[in-house]
Length: 348
Image (cartoon, rainbow, N blue to C red; front, side, top):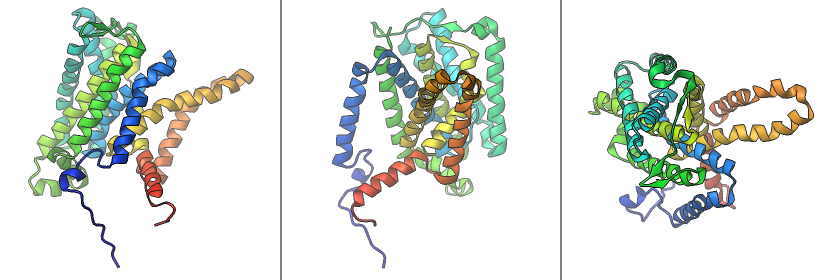
């Protein structure tokens, strides 16, 4: 016999991002932890947290494109590179402040996304992958060989940013800027997916022909998805450039695109929380490997060349594991844990 679940919540209540009191309390506690994080962590810990924030923004953009719209991209690092070099050139040569270079970097990347999105109107699957891969290599080639603009492998040095006259000359102060933008990106993505536009993205991903039959404008929403994803990648790239103070072509290679693909696969395709979990996990994974391998290298120096490629192998094994055994990624594991505690001590 089927069991019906009755609810007294209204439709607007069901659409809330945090519908329950427990979720809102958890949000307050998490917010307090994030706000006080730089107070009890060292400089390097705050730097890693900044990398996590930048990765979250970029992973949210890629998941919106690939996980929600079903358009595979192997050139996400290229869009980050466009945003990073736009911000670096504007900051170093014209002296524009952070508040101006961030949106301009996002717009430059979004314009590139519009150009790449045009072939997506007729291509999908392997053909779209090859197209975005070609774009990745084109951007790498331009960055490396247009020396008068990008300084090639010498890189471009960025001045320390400031926000409304307040200098951001430490990782601790810059952390709060990245935190605010990461939260804004997560809230924006969550609301977008709950809107008509987000439902159109998901319809295109699940059944593109059926979506077109029911009146969804395929060209409009595919290009929109590319543009939004690229904008977020461009902003993330600009933040990354200011964080490092020096950017070079090595920061935006094909390997970085693979890393962001790994983030959304490990975290959970098509989910906001999955993007966050996957980004944090993949950023902290090398730190964990270094913490484990450091004592081994100290004790056995001959193992150093072999351990050097360990992280790449671990990345591959983790991706294979999640693809085979946990397609929903860390998000799926989190859902099962939450359901278990909701029904505990019962098993149904």
